[in-house]
Image 1 (cartoon, rainbow, N blue to C red):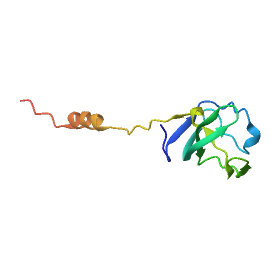
Image 2 (image 1 turned 120 degrees about the vertical axis):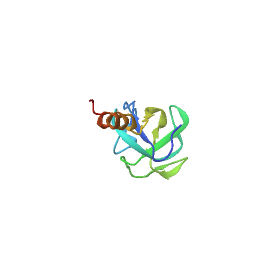
Image 3 (image 1 turned 180 degrees about the vertical axis):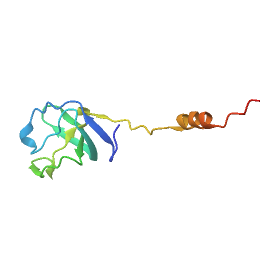
Image 4 (image 1 turned 90 degrees about the horizontal axis):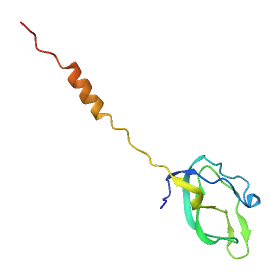
Length: 105
C-alpha cells in the first residue's frame, strides 16, 4: 500500500471531525508520508492511518490510546506514481539527425 517517504495526494478532504486536528490536509494537496500506523475511529473502527511531513499537529490525550498525534485515514489518499523521464529516444533522433551526410558527386 503506502510506505514512509512516499508522495501521496489527498483525494477526500471532507473530514468529519476537524476539531481533532489543528491543521487538515487539503483535497488535491500533495503530501509526504512520515508514519503509518493503525488508528481507531469511533465511527469506523480500526483502520490504517498516516501522518504527513507537511502537516504536523500537537499530540493529544486519548483514553484508550494515550498521547499521540492523530493521523488521517489512509484511504483518503492516493499514491503518486513518480516516473523517471527517459530522453534516450530523443538523443538517438538527435544523433541520427546530426550525423554527417555523405557527399554526393
